[in-house]
Image (tube, rainbow, N blue to C red; front, top):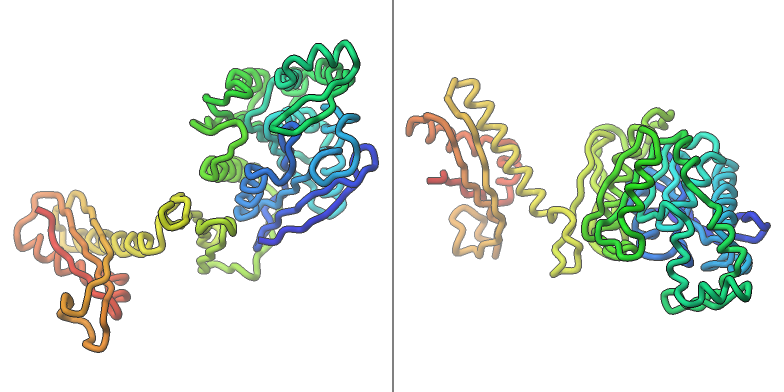
Length: 406
């Protein structure tokens, strides 16, 4: 999907480095992603979540706060309030491009920052936090023995994730006074709180405090076994999918442009990222699903394989055909299930295939038919399975073997 490298002016007039991840088709809305303390816009969680949301039609601006990543400025001169101010500048930038943000997404301390910035951004509809602290001063727990030195000497070097940062007393003073309680109580936007029970950096009790302080509409979603940095790609994809689905009810009220490139009746398949095989599948504007490959062949196993989807289509069409026939013939079929497997047989194993072909695709169906059925009715249903439209399509070049379960 398209990604623009851009810069915009931050709170102290420094150039802030950013990426704008854009949907390939219709843009349903826009969002800003705020990264965690001392991180950058390019950490895996930010990159994956932004890309995933873009695949869902939400443009995402992710940027490096002043003094971090590729942005200008001195990190030592920044604090929590300056991060909030940078977020407001990011919102102004998007508004100037006629893409005013409707969603703010913040990870860790970035989650606290988006809550604090929300009242200053016009037209905001939703705020989502991921592993955010209820009290911004929680970040000082990472400073260890240097905390006392900062208080006594006015500054000290702190090692975080293998890198040295200078933390000044002004930073401690700023986070000490940055309460979120009033902001949450007056938040004029829907709130989604996401947190992992096993987060060893910011405890899940923070999520409970954020949730309790906010008014409705608000939602809480657990990230199960995810770590604080959401390093697992599957966890990042899950978080993005939840945010996209949750925010849909707030974005659907926006005027939507007709997409000339994706008319009704088109099935669009789009890569979720270049690093694996996961695909986002859109059927018009009505349905969303995924395809992937197993981990053993380089995928992430977040969806069925293409052949599994093909088998699912055959199974679904078979079950629908049997149900339609049973209704018309008043057959007491109470339930039908279809097991489908796919394989490739050598020519000697295939009686019906072209002799010039060395191998052929074989789909094996097993029908589980429930109800008080006579042998004649079961035989009739077995025969009608071959009338399934998808069966007919596949049978032009494939072999489909159908049996009844015991």
